[in-house]
Image 1 (tube, helix red, strand yellow):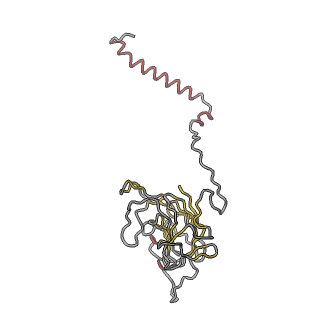
Image 2 (cartoon, helix red, strand yellow):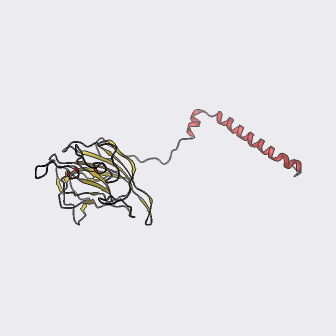
Length: 261
């Protein structure tokens, strides 16, 4: 076709007609496909998830077992040396004054399962009822900085952002699912570690907590390191250990395992 004023004028029309024709043919072809052919177009076959066995009341096959009731070989004292807490009947109990214990291995994003129990005795040496933060206090620290509170919160009034399953002094749990003193409790926690670009926070941490099977923290943002006094702030860090707190109360723990995410 010669390049003339007429051809230049009709070229866009011809192009639009051709495009319309192709679109019509494509639509017609689509309409002739069988339902199973249309369904196949949204099927994604890769990557294939790894197989993980998950026995009832057991430990997933890809989990790291941190404490199986037999020894504390995967733990150490924050004061140096081995973990000096009391080991008996498949559980480890805080030895007041011996200090916190932490895992020898460091972790980033994890799914953690841990069971804990507070003593049935809820009176002090003076015979008075222990109350508030003084009743069987401990904590589970992720990366040695971010605490999920452990406390006997069964008929025990305290500030809600410091009760059992709180992100201590940050986020109040959605419900109080605490069982009576002397009963074993479970935490199933999904922890997403904060991310840093040099010394600057690029993405905050997040945590989801199920307390005795009840969702009590729903992907809440961690505001910074746990502080007893003052506001939480972030300081850049990498992967770090899981830490259990010695708050001078004989809280017991068992069946501790995690999955790296």
